[in-house]
Image (cartoon, rainbow, N blue to C red):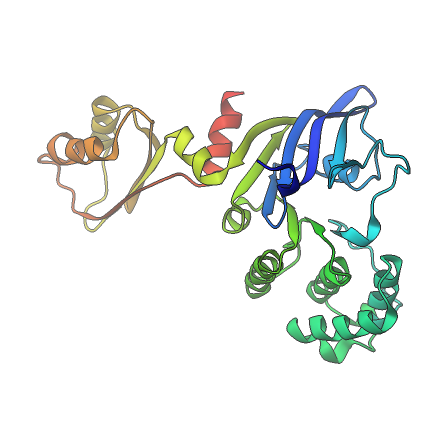
Length: 319
């Protein structure tokens, strides 16, 4: 990979608080123009890692490079603020301030000209159906609207890299869909997005590459399709049309193949196939051995790669 294609490098970074390692020897790269997912459960170390990337914390060891120069150990020790955008998990807006003046003030902190900032603010507010709120105070907006304003503040100055920490928090489903499209749009326009979230289903629909962290350590890292391929599992979903399953079917499944039964009830079943059981072999097994003369009407069946959430759960369970 050419060095110019890497925007952010995290190299063997460690950070501890009161003797507890919040981040333990983490390394990854973020490429220019990609949407990169930083995932993990609450308390995994995501926020600490983000704060080190932003220069709020300094690593105890390791280093962070931005655009080929040191972020944490460079000559000034400061981030290039005009090139970074940040949407924090916690809302940080002053509710007594007006929407417009807030956006212009924050854009000015990133070095953007006031006239250009106002033009961009109005365009973004229009895109998010908030144009009429430009002169209104933030406290007059709902939590979801405030989240949208904070999103605009993160991207208004056209940064090279934007860090979005739990951007879907507090949003209803239509607004979540809107944010998905907005984030895809940022990447199409050439912006690099570092996306941190615990809603793995939403992030999975956006990201080509991901880094999963658990208890401060790397769990999975790399291309999402390759992670799924290397993991090798398949999820089988069956839906029954008539009579529900019995304990006999459960015994047949357990005896015939090493598939893990995730759920089994009167409406259907969900199984987890290990990597050494090819889908075609399971289908043959299903017809010949599992169904047999069992009084069961199979209406639908699907065999698919597991979700990122399922992979994460299975990997963490084994740690």
